[in-house]
Length: 303
Image (cartoon, rainbow, N blue to C red; front, top):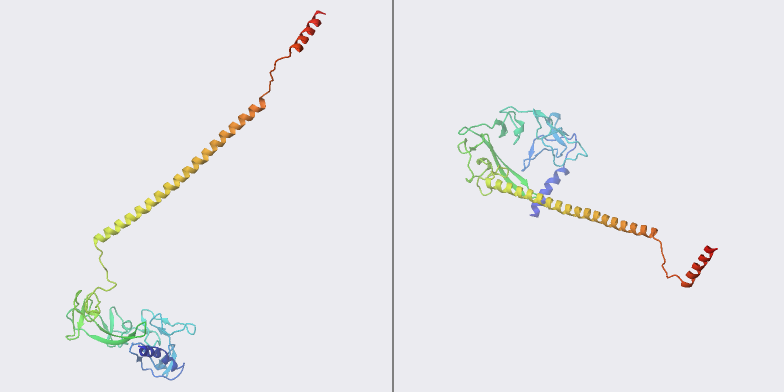
């Protein structure tokens, strides 16, 4: 296990140790690893071996993807992609016009061929349009990829130029009908669903459209309706609770005001009565004093 991981890490690091520099002599012969990733004798992600310049290393001028493994934009700006009428070769030399049917193309590079539904088979541009029962051709590619743990995974891809719903039978070199769900298969291209499981059966792919049963839609609608009614009920209860609290506050406010007003009126009436009251003392008069006053009054009258 550790040996496989060491080999994988070494394959990423060792090429940079022997990378050539700008202007160095090189061999323009393409080098394809087991993963079919292009390389050449420059062994430098920023350079390619240019046969038109006396087999020397020069800077990459284009790219056929938005991401280039190992490219550092702090050192060099990422190369531009080509327009719809051009393609960028594997070596990234320069944008090149599309190749006509029958022309030579690089392995697995359908985008290099001109025309609708073009495909690159055995390094030759074809149209993927051979009908059911028609003659066809195919190519086989065995390559190795690496998973997240660094272990190698070998895969085999067979492609052909048959139309959709058919695949090329290599034994007869003719297009036959694709297989239905549940049929035994070996490659994805053999199934109508274009997905062959690890158990060798045609299945629906993960991106296939699934029809939802009517009762599920009914259940979903009822669930949404119950949810909406539940939310409205909760809001109504909250509103009732807040309204009751507000009414209690209003009743208490006006009740307190009435009580204060009554007390104020009572206090005002009491103060008014106390300001207008006089005291009368009633006693029994003295007899002798009263007699003297009466005698004195008669004598004065007679004179």
